[in-house]
Image 1 (cartoon, rainbow, N blue to C red):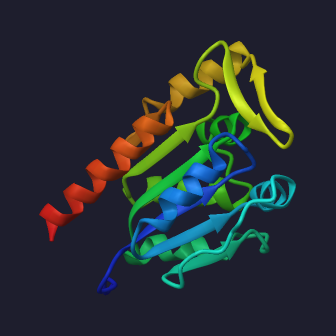
Image 2: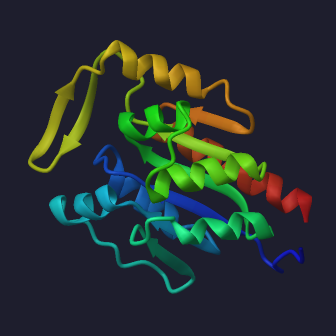
Length: 183
C-alpha cells in the first residue's frame, strides 16, 4: 500500500480525568494529530467541562461505530505513533488481555498489529495517588490488579508505559526527535 505523505500522531483519550487537561494541552502542541475519543472520554469532556477546542490540523474521531472503523488507517501507514493518554485501569486491563471493544482499545490493538510505536500514560501506577475529580483533587488507592496490569503492559512489544505527566512529556518529545532524524 502507498504510504501517506505525512504520517500522523494517533492519540486516544479514555475516560479518565487524570491529567486530562494537560494531555489536551500536549495534543495542541503536535502537528498532524488524529484524536480518538472513546465514549467514556466524551463523558469526561462534559463532566470536567474541558475545552475540546483544538487546532484545525487535528482530526477528531468519536466512538460511534461498532467496528471502530477509523482503525483501518493503521493498515495504510497513516500513523507513526500512537499515544493513549490518559489510560484508565479499564483500558489498560483490556489492552493487556486483548479486548478491543471500543475505539481506544481498538486503536491500541491495531497499532500493535501494525508495529506502530505506542506510548501509554497509565493512570494507576502507585499504591496511592492524587488525581483530579470533577470537584477537585482526590486520593485514590489503585487495586493490586490495576498495578499488576500496568506492569504487564510494560512487556508489550513497541509499547512504552509512562507513569507521570513528566514522563509522558519526555516520551513524546523523544519520539518527536526520532521522527525528525527518520525523515
